[in-house]
Every structure is written in structure tokens, then in C-alpha cells.
Length: 352
Ligand SMILES: NC(=O)N[C@@H](CC(=O)O)C(=O)O
Ligand SMILES: [Zn+2]
Ligand SMILES: [Zn+2]
Image (cartoon, rainbow, N blue to C red; front, side, top):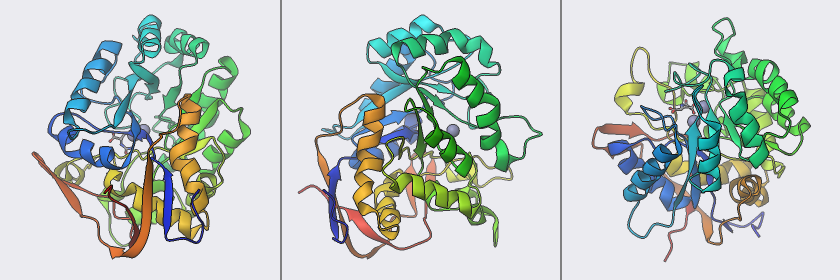
């Protein structure tokens, strides 16, 4: 058990329940960073073109495995990108055969590579009903795309316009509200039955919207859903450290080349995989809740997905302040690593 006052904590190896690994050169550059610290990850399907069918998911899983360091035991858990043409039978086959653990709902236009997503939820109702029957989770990017809705309100409006009606129509559907960013989202999950959960990212536990906009514009803090005001960040920290099994880590580590972020219209995404565990240790320690880190990062996620926690352990050690690399290199250029804006004392102890 993690010891509250100690300078070392040992946990079951954490998993990442929302991760973007991309493909090609980017995949090869980022996969080892997740594989070093995490046991498993739910891998997002928003490639170009997206990972829609069970066959595409199986092929993508092979490409991920080939990008892992030799001997790595990291396990990619695959998701299918829900389109209005998705076949219920293909989804069920992917789940039953273990090729995919979940289906991902992107409202068309809500985020990076979401244009092939869903415009009319009625069209995918047969898929969702089938998923409810077999217990397959639906991961949801929870933002409306209505341009009339203020970007800071898109999650709260999505909950009222889309999630509440969906819960009434298909109450048995298991849902993960991905990268929850608001008090509204936290309350919605807390008040719901146990078949609804939420992931919380590393960066939304650390930054509020000032990080993006105050004192100069900082594209590396721009992601979707966009960070909200401080009271929402505090609500997320409280949910994460509460031990409530419906909240668990999904880093949403979403690498983009610096050349794509640093544009007049830069893309959304924060790359946090290499620094997530040290940052989480700081956040949980500051909240006096190091003892809850294992529940958030290593236990609650597998419980929701019906999997056992990892047998392996990792140890985090508190010591001198250290500086993580500001960026990583890929064959196509650098990718900036999330800077939490505070010093890091914790490190993952290297296996001896
Ligand atoms: N979170 C982001 O800002 N971006 C993600 C997409 C997503 O998770 O919405 C990406 O793929 O870049
Ligand atoms: Zn998303
Ligand atoms: Zn994401």
C-alpha cells in the first residue's frame, strides 16, 4: 500500500484508459514512452483514415506491437471508430474475439479527425443496442458541435442534449465520458448508475484556461475539450483523489508535430505520456492523497473494463527536482512534452 508521508510509493503498474498513439513515424517515436510506464492503454482510433472495422483494429494493433521496444509487455487495447455505417455484427465480433475493448463515439466535427464520426445518433442506435446487450463500453468525446454553443459550454450542453437522453433510451449501455473537464461532468457521473464512468487527463488536473490564454497564447496547452476555469480543475482533482471507482486515468496524450501546433490555426492535443506518472504523484501528494493514486491510475480503470489490475508494480521515488525533456524527436520533427509549470520531484524508479 502507498504510504502517505513516504518518499516512495509502490503501486500496481498503471494503465492509460485514453491514449493516442498515431501511426508511422509518430507511433514509433511515442509508443516506447507509454510502454515504459504503463501496462495497457485504450488506444484511440482517430487515425487518417480512422480505424473502423475489427479487421482494421487488428492490423493497427499489429503495427503498435511492432513499434514497441523488444521484450515490452505493454498491451494495446483497441477501439473501433463509430460511423453511421458501422455494422452491429462487426462490433460484436471484435468484442467477443478480444480484438477491441470499446467503441469510440466522435460527434462529427467535435475534435481532431472526427469528420467521419456520428451526426445523427439514431443512425447508430442498432450498434449501441447490441453493445448494451454484450456489455461492450462506449467511449464518448462529450462535446456538442453546434457552433452556436460557446466552446467552454460544449461539454455541459452535450451532457444535457445527448448523454441524458441516451441514458434514458439505452440505460444498460456502459459509457465512459472521456476526458471530463467540468464540475457538470463530474456531477453527472457521480449521480449516474455504476455503468457510467469518466476518464480524467493529466493536463486537466494541472492547468486551467489561464494557461492557454493569459500573458500570451500558448498553443501547447490547447486541447479539446479546452481547459476550463479553475473551479472546474479543482472539481476534477477532487474526483480523481476521491477514490470513487468511476473516475480513472486516461491521459489523452495526443502528440502533434510542433509544426502542426504552431500555426495560425494550430491543432488540439497535449502530449503528456512521458511525464504523466511524475506529475500525478505531485498532484496527489499536494492534495494529501498519494494513497489514492493507485485507485485512480491502476485499479478503477481495469475494474470498469472487467479486467484484472496489472500484477507488476512500479515504484515512484521523491528526490531532487529534475527536468524532463522539453520535447521528443520523431523522424518528422519535434513534439513538445507537456510542461506542468511546477517542478517535478517524483520519478519512476527504473527496474534494476
Ligand atoms: N484531445 C485533443 O485535443 N486531441 C485529440 C482528440 C481528442 O481526444 O479529442 C487528438 O487526437 O489530437
Ligand atoms: Zn476527445
Ligand atoms: Zn483523445
